[in-house]
Length: 357
Image (tube, rainbow, N blue to C red):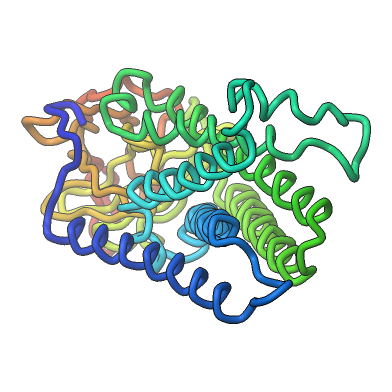
């Protein structure tokens, strides 16, 4: 992110992933269209354009639902973490499918009059005081606008220049977009008298997404309460025993009730760094040391454990913390050092010597 920008950082895995992704989208839409054209005929038949709109909307909302499940699933189990690597590719593809749906719908329903089609979307139905007749199409347009902003800023150029905090806040609008889409689809079902099966699937999916996020939130809150450091004296915090941490792994500890740090045990001793990756705020403490560097489990960004700096030529930096070991207890100074500050690792005393480090 700090060295150069490319439209897409292609590699073999990304090419395979994107080919499978596109093939899946095409297959989904094709099967939907074929089933719709062959099963419903005669007076129950739907126009091919209507089927295309339903196929693309169903595909897009399925993809968005999967995207929203990946985050909490990865928090609940590291087995899902690899799905995070290409989530932006998934998101941009989802937006393109939603854009096809939106463009076809606007053209089909608003493209043959004298009023600008976009203006017509917002003015053709003004029944905002009626639930049964509420204009659901503007909700879809607003959701699509949010998804466009997210797709347009998905590149690391924007992540770097907006700063990770602003970028992350902007992309949290995906939940607003999802809520708008749920309302858009639900009102469309009610007004078009579509089968209740679609509504049940949408509602069930929304319940699963909400449940996953709630379970993850409760789990994180309990873990923070359990792993909160204890005051030791002279401002130092006791964060646990050396023996609690596996070699080349970390223990995530909460300081002052909110700030998380990653306390790593490695060949040179004990070091503590911020738990927040400079890329997308990933949880560094859930990663491990690979080739001498702390490696973020979300996207593979790396940092030298003793100074919080990415190895050259990269320039990302994260805060470090002073550490010492007394007996087998790890003590951390809760005052963070400036990002990239060199800190000598605390040596681990022999279990039989009784020495202090």
